[in-house]
Length: 416
Image (cartoon, rainbow, N blue to C red; front, side):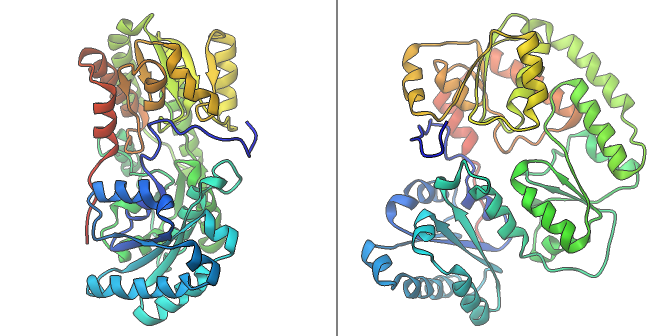
């Protein structure tokens, strides 16, 4: 799909966006200064999520951009926000849009002005759909901007930073017990920080685990700044790949991890619960918060007849699983989910018994859907059990696609 092609935005789009990610930083606020067309969906979503005292929008007109007065208006808006909040936020973030790229807005200058006046940390996040298919999309730049605000602490411990994932590993995962038994910890994640002091402690960790590619710039920066090594740990829903992840972690930490008991329990769970899936038709979309092709492979191994995969890009991690699917399930049809032609796909009436990811459910006649959205934090052998349980729940208690989609996307936020 060429970079300059028009894209179709299916209804699942706009779930966990750049602004929502930034607002997970404790005591932070975000100001978006842009034309209303840029902020409409973002603003409505953040208001619905009850970030009413943390997300602010300043409408900038064509004239303001043309005569350069928009920077003065932004600084005035900052003063109004700080007065309204009684100077309470610890972090003030500006949200840039595509227009700022075109006109060359100097947000670094604005940040310096705000930092000097209010003695708080600032950052500039990036909401730029025009770079979505580029080498440095908005998610990468936003993650880097957020973690650049860490202030170095003068100590080092055996902590692990979990980076790139929207939320930390589920408390029910065996991963916590396994690393603790190996003398490693604590586990640190952005959303688990209650203060900026907690956030700064991420500089004390001895290891970084890259859970999702969106933080690949961050792990490289932290290696240069703190000497913190990192390992890429991809999502996995088959026994083989979970095994591989734990062996990778053993090499990374330089110590054995006791996983045998958890593995045996998981194998027994799979054999006792997956026979009912055999022959069920399925579709997998790229909106699942894991490796699309790895998940499709796992589903085939569990007996599903996967009919369709919807994905815009194929990354290095996908290659092994894509080849396996070619060899073992060659009848699967692969579609780009955001190509303009996909706006007509729904009218074809393609149906499956179950879908994974809301775009797959939408394209396939609003099939019963396993969401697997960014809040999906199950990991390891527990992640396999959680997936199988969720599949059974969707099969036994199917719900309307739209109802399930809205409930899944809109987890309420937190105000200052």
